[in-house]
Image (cartoon, each protein chain N blue to C red):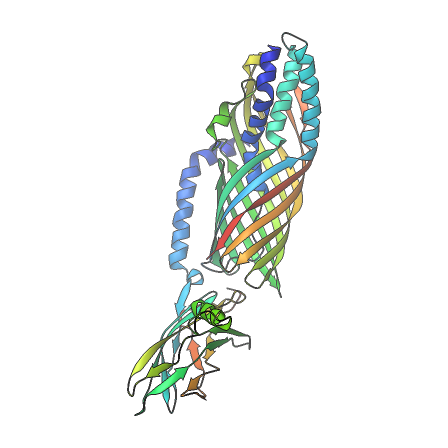
Length: 181
Length: 276
C-alpha cells in the first residue's frame, strides 16, 4: 500500500490540475453538458394580435422567453395575460405566471389586499410591446425535448377571451435529445 | 510525572482523536441526493461530519481510566504500561471519535453520469456515479477514491499530544456505494444508501516521552453499512441532514500490542447544498 501513498502524494497537485482542465473542457465542449439552449419558434397571430418569439432560452429546469406583442390593427388594444403554460410532447404541463416569480409574488400579495396586480397592457396601432415569460419546474430536463409548446390560456384582448395558436419551440439541430442524456 | 501526565492526558487524547479521524469522517458521508446531476448541472455543498464509534469509545474510556489510575500511583509508567497506552492511543486515532467539515462540488456529465470533488481537513476525494431512473425513484451506483494527506486544517491539534506523536499519516480510502431516493417537488429530497469502504493506512507514530521510539504501522480497516438522508429547501438551496451507520472491521499492531479496530460507527452529517 505504501507505494500508492507516495504516488498519490507526489501526483496530487498534477491530478487536481488535470481534473480541473478536464472539467473545464467538458463544461465548454460537451453538448450534453451545455446548460442553456436557444430554441426557435415561428410567430403566431390572431386577427388582433401578432406574437413573435425574440428569445427562448431553455435550461434544465427553466424556460425563459422574450416575446414581442404587435398590434396590426388601426385601433389601440389592451392585453391581459396572467398565466403561461408549457406542454411537453408527452402531455405533461407546467404553469407559471407571466413575468415569472416576481409577477406571481405580486399577484399573491394582491390577493390578500397588498398592492395591485399588473394592469392591462395597452398597445397603440402598429406598435409592439415586450412580454416576458418564465416557467420553472424541477421534474423534467427541458433541454432534451425536440419541441415544447407554450400557451397563454387566459389571454384577453380588450377584455374578451382570445384564442391564440400555441407557440411551438423547436430545439436546435445540434442539441442532444432524449431524457437519458 | 503522574501529575503532569494527568493534566495533559485527556485534552491530548481528544485532540489526537479529532486530528486523525477528520479524514474518515469526511469519507463516511454521502450527503447528496440519489438523483444524478443532469449534464452541466452544478452542485455545491458544505457538509459537517461527526464520527461516533460506539464500541471504541466505551473501550477506550475504560482502558484509559484503568491506565490513568495505575499511573497516578506511580512516578513513572512501566514500559509495559507505556506500550499499552501508546498502542491504544494509536488505535483511537485511527478508529476513534472525530469531527470534520468538507466542501463538495459536483458536476453532471450527461448521459446519467456525474462526478464530484471533495476537499476537507486534509482529505482529497473524487467520486463518479451512474444513475438509473425508476419512475419517481432514482438510483445511483458510484465509487469514490479518497486520499488523506494527514494535514489538519486546525494546525494546533497536530502538536497537542505530547506523549503520542503521529509523525505522519497516509491514508487511502476506496469505496463503492449505492443510493436510492426520490424528489418531492422542488422542496424535498429523500435518499437511502449502502456503502462499503476499504481504508488502507500507513502511520509513523512514536511516544518519546514514554521512552518509545517511532514506529511505522501499515494496515487497513474495512467499513460497511448504510445511510439515510434528507434535503429540505426550495429549487436551488437545501439544508441537508444524513445519518450513516457503518460496521468497522480491522486490527492494528503498534508498540508490540494488537488492538481491535472493529465496532459500530455512527456518523451524522449536516450542512447546506446548492444546485444550479
